[in-house]
Image (cartoon, rainbow, N blue to C red; front, side):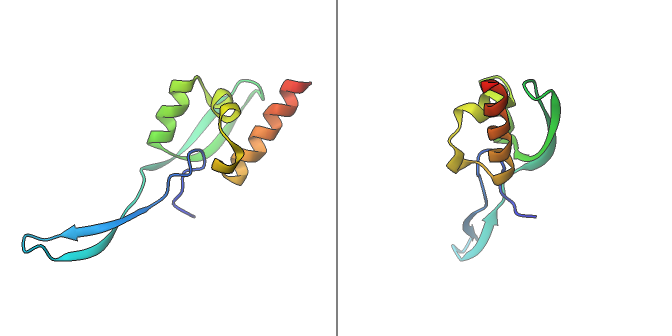
Length: 94
């Protein structure tokens, strides 16, 4: 399973561990990913996603999963989130 947030695209970053003697060794910083079930009011069902806590806070700030998906560009979303966005747009058009 990849360590990338399905909503924000946030992934791992690379940096250094720096010792007291200023020796630098490579390390990775991983996002705080959680498996969550978010409610889609338009679709009327729960959706399971692997989301960073930063992404979850953003979704709550915007007003829910539906509002987040509709305002976000498709290039920033995972394939699963893109599918959800298309379903929302079809349901809104009907």
